[in-house]
Length: 316
Image (tube, rainbow, N blue to C red; front, side, top):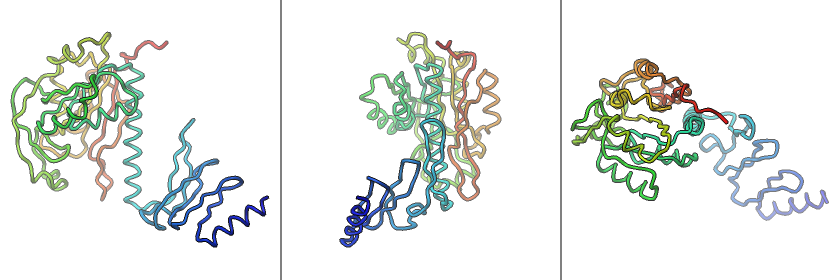
């Protein structure tokens, strides 16, 4: 039978069919000629499409990297620099999202305050990783908040609040920038050089509210509230945090973008931000790069995930 099998496969090649023999009882057939089949594990193969060498990965040798029980990563052995950085970014984003999801489960979080929500990327990520509790998203830019409402309209436990958080209740102007970079602060010289979009900034009047004045409404109807605070305000995180006052101690965990390179004027650096959070009892569980300068490899900002260890619920 083995001889007959080889003959049949050999016959197919005469009809311009490419044969990738995986072993007894398994074969991949294709006629395009730009598919590659490589082993990615003891019992698994990766099928990729594209001309040899395109994006640096199609013809690359892949190797399985065991990550633990039930998890294996298939990685091309040699990648060009741009592809290598893209791999790191995607891997860090995925691991960061999984880490946050596990923290929410472990600390039994039932309300997430999503401050600086943009069009709901963070909330959608939470839902994709299994979080089903309440989300309260804050987005002050009117046009962006409208898009966010459309994203959340079929999710009754995902609320949208069209204002920013700050140290005091007031009206102010925000610098509206394309994408997710609108900020209460203006850009630094470094920020202007790195991000051309700052050249097309406009201002919009918005409302700022203190977080401690919003907690009761946001947590209404939740038995034994266990809130978590996510801050992504483009340099304004400490101002939004300050508005929680003494009620920050009700939060079992939090995360904040902490900066190594200042994109905005007056943006606190990482050491100042972490000292502030640690002074209130939060401790670091993970640090994940948000943006990196490709030419030098420098990290501009980390997503810093923290918990209050004494808030860990009794297990059982």
